[in-house]
Amino acid sequence: MTETLLVGSGAAIGAMLRFTLNNYFESQTKRLPRSTFFINLTGSLLLGIFFGLHLSNSMYLFLGTGVMGGYTTFSTFNFELFVLWNNDRLMFYRYLIGSYGLGLLLSFIGIVIGSKI
View 1: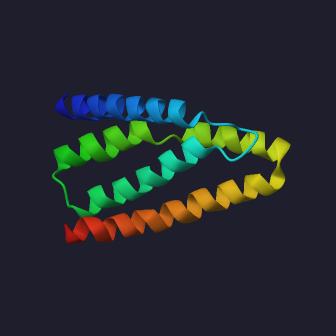
View 2: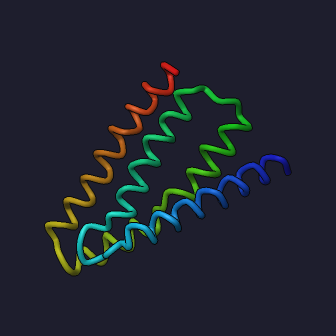
């Protein structure tokens, strides 16, 4: 039960952060969805840092699974890809490759940063 509360409370915080940033960026799906792009890339970096810090299981459940799970958003990303596929194929490929490529790179950079802290 404690693990469920850690993940759930973290997810609530992450979802509120995502909602705030989405409102700030006012994502447009006909062009590059800046808010989802930014959120998923910063989430990749932070998740890498959390992993590199070798946090306790409880802290990782709260920050990694909870906060980052609520903060990043795969379902929105897929919907935006679907819209871009229908509206702008070049932007579709840029968004797809940029999100995965930069996301992986930032995850590795985060692990290095977290390992050195």
